[in-house]
Image (cartoon, rainbow, N blue to C red; front, side):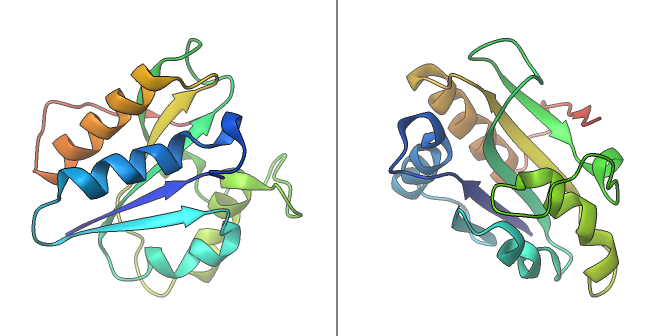
Length: 149
């Protein structure tokens, strides 16, 4: 089972890419057993989506992890539980979520992947991210994530 959580603020153009991927996936249709979630700006309110052992694919813009406009697939396991540099206030982002997740999870954590769209994430990046999500949703094994460090 897979859950795809698209993160972003559709009201702010520089942070709307996750919302645009959500809309594309909604129109494309996903196979049975794949849940699509509009994560918006939920922050730590996303924690319950990690509790049932499903694979979780996060979709968000990133900064400093790839070349400008590129889309990368990351394995989030190396980032889980790290609190170095994590900011826990408004805007804490994924580092905050990953920092607290192991301490509050009910049971074992699922596989957590991030489809990261490096800023600025234009139309091409949104389409590439949506295609990656569809490949993961349909059980494609051609994508090899790199460790999120």
